[in-house]
Image (cartoon, rainbow, N blue to C red):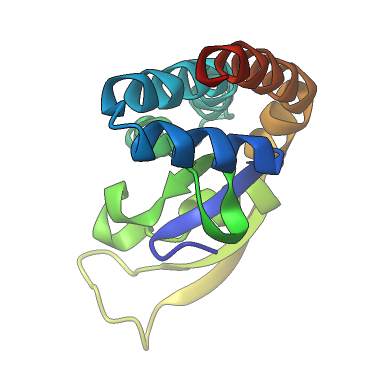
Length: 168
């Protein structure tokens, strides 16, 4: 898992994508390479937006839940890679974007359960806090990704086929 990622959906592309990106780079066509990445990210942004909407629709309890849901939605990012073992597009919830006290909440809310302290009035002493388990309907990220993967793969293939014709 990439450093700083809470949850990740990796959609691997065929090696053709790596070959196309390399040929564009060798030909000095950075403009087309950037456009290639842009088109692939655009295809994946639909899934990222689905995940963001799912995060915002999570059930709400307590005064911090709106902030948590907004942070979860804000943490969803799309990136592309043209080399190595991760050729393709990656949609991930980034821990680095989450508030300090909620770095692992993307993974916990996707799992549907977590433990947290409940403090006595006016106290922040974790030793005297009561620890409770909290549950909720999970899989907000996983469900959004599973519904979108076929659509993303098809879009990536269309982009690859179009660029194959341009570099021949």
